[in-house]
Image (cartoon, rainbow, N blue to C red; front, side, top):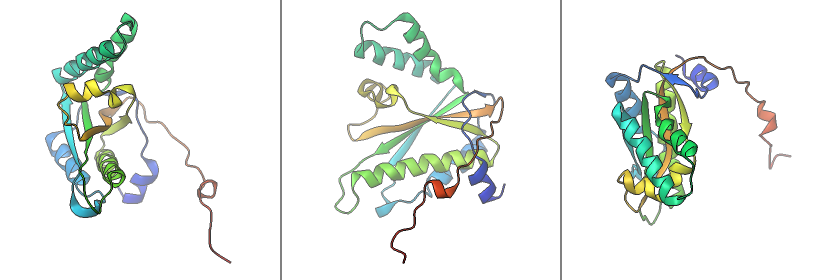
Length: 186
């Protein structure tokens, strides 16, 4: 796939089936992450790879965290949370590992982690692997962080669901003129 075709045609795929990325595809996906812009070369990210029964365990983590946060949560809400990780054969949890640095503010480190996650999505799509980046309340829940083993200086950037799309959507691309203004020109 040509680079511009990739950038102009990639879309999120909310419903994903088997197969998950192969080990060879994953190797390239992670290598793409390591090429993200990174002021200071801090590599302020890491990833959790969740598949198989790990997805059910992640659902249990979501349920436990939701019960702690809201003891009155309904069974229907808990069932939905438990099933969320089953929407794809693999989930990559993108984690920002933030560190104090005199020249690299935390926001730049978060952006680097986000760029690494985006690079993974692009590398996946280039290899025929579909994905969707999800966040939601569980991404920001401190009990989810604790149960997944995150350190105090870490935060979830997103859950990247990967697999094969049941159907590819066509999403129109807006005109650059809607978002770009010339400034400082006579």
